[in-house]
Amino acid sequence: MSANAAAWRALTANQRAGWTDLGLSMTRSDSLGSSYTLTGFMAFCSVNNNNVAAGNATVTDAPALVTPPTILTAVVTLTAAAFSIAYTVTPLAAGSRLFSFVSPQRSAGRAFEADLRLLAVSAAAAASPAVLLTAYTAKFGVPVVGNRIFMSFTTYLTGFQSGPLVTSAVVA
Image (cartoon, rainbow, N blue to C red; front, side, top):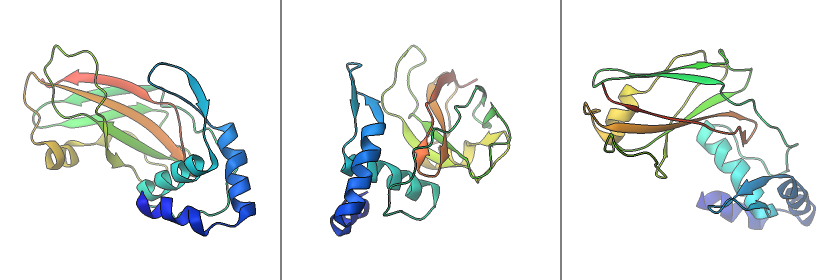
């Protein structure tokens, strides 16, 4: 992220103006539900941070705004020995990737989680299911029966992410 922030300083005035225009088209919501648009710097960092996470090259010129399709359904298989997500639409469109965000293990009684971390990015045009057990175990340990894990799934395309499909499951 810091490399992308530093790269902003090397852009030309015309490139910054392009990013500013793009940022005005990108809407987000804050924690109170109020909508706001991004600055050019925020749009530049958002697109390029997504590109880096997907393993793609960063861009200096603002791309056209793209809204990737949202994941429609996710069926979670979660045990101490299996963690996979069967999702639709499958396979993903050409160039699209699945971003899987997960939480650490929590009490099964918990109903909300704000600490979701990027766990895995699929290959382009990947087909369902996404198998996450190895990556999850490496990051958070073996899932413990009775604990809840929160998940969020987005699709990525050319620097932009779709809206999230958010769910959770208790380890069976």
